[in-house]
Image (cartoon, rainbow over all chains, first blue to last red; front, side):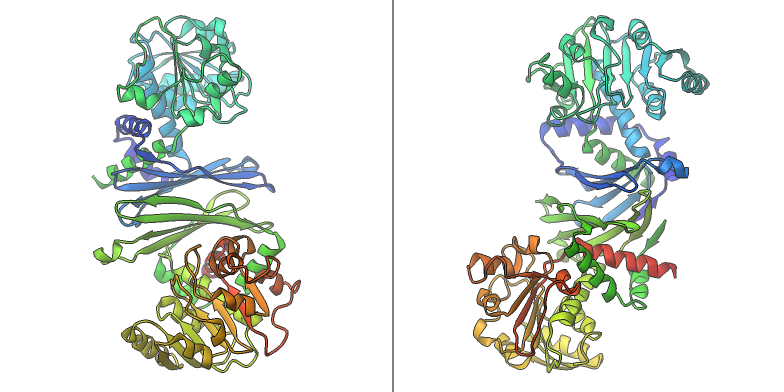
Length: 315
Length: 315
């Protein structure tokens, strides 16, 4: 049994291309080859906190995975991160624990960024002129970095609500070779960029339908609850292709949920990302289409990323 | 963050009296001070296996606990134990992982044996003449050993279906100072013993109502599913006091579930063990009463035992 801390996990991640595994995970999920029971939840009041246990496996695989993720919202007062987590990898043949990944939530960040790259791979226009990022935090950085393997575009416009946060983002990403413009007006991102990733906890739309130009792809990552919303529901109505990572889940939370509730899309419009990856459904079919991917996060991503890190550590 | 393997856990257990914590856990549970969400479950077909995730916490405590227990039933063919497990102890204030207890299922065995001792403490007659054990496996050994702190009785009669297993039990327990008789007839245990513990996976009653003498206490530990049953339902009808560790759970599985289904006890008859411990309900009130405790296993036991081991390791 192996125990890996965050430093070891980061070091292994540096040697891996996790995208093929994430793609394969989505494809297996959409094919019905993933067993993912309902999320288990535990809530705390004093101090306020929540714990979610996500778990599951792919049939005919070697492992099953249990992820424990917590949010304790008074932690910053103690100088600690609000979010924390670990993943446990077990043998699907014997139940024996194979690896404890003490990732402190980092693998969730990575698998989320990798999913954004997969969505862009299948849905972004072939000629990305400028990448737009809404949200200048950790995930806004990781999404950009993981897009590197699916587009050569190094031109970026980043939106946030706080100029000093934007300045830090600009400085960090410039150091990695990107050319970064900042803006406090989300519409400017829509005007300049044809690949946009939204990674905020917003509860009201940041982008309006009128802002979106033909040929744009948007990946919405931030909304993972019934309350959060980053895109005007009309954008989903306007989109030629609306994609969800898990349609079961997207009907209960996120942008597709909001668009269904607003009656601007037909229930049968959304397509599952894994069905596009597997070639069973069409993704983008022209350079002028507008496409939207709504990523709410699926345990199959946790299964795939933890396996890759563990297997990577053995080789 | 601490990681403890089975050897370290066993070494700490040797220095602890876990009964007070288990008692306090049951009392808190019955008072409504435990938060124990539904068990999470994952099933496997090839090879056959199941994984259960039990989790929860006591309000106003420092920790929450997640236990992962698996059964992979082809494991013995590989020279491995069918059952396995670990417990994770987290801070209830920050969500930070405090301890990984790689107990391989041993702490579940121990907390189950400790619960048997707690039940006997509150329900057994004061003069135990002979302890009867039905089931000569690991739990049959542990139940006897944990009874040491609640009764001085060293006289034992053990029942099993296999004489060589009984002989091993006799030899092992004799080495620990007990005087052990063996039998292949369960009725002989009922005739000789006034404190009986049943720890088998039986799906048909091993003891009949006619066998049970006045003044007997029976703790039924084996039945933890709707299918399993060790006691004739009529024994619960006959009992002056019928006790369950969790009445919510005992209405869905175990001996009380069977007795309710057979209509031999009124729905309001069963009393929760924690209510007796807390002094809110009566346990045994005379030496001639027949009492039955139905233990189906509650996550509060996991919470308490893992805390004790972790705290014991710090001192």
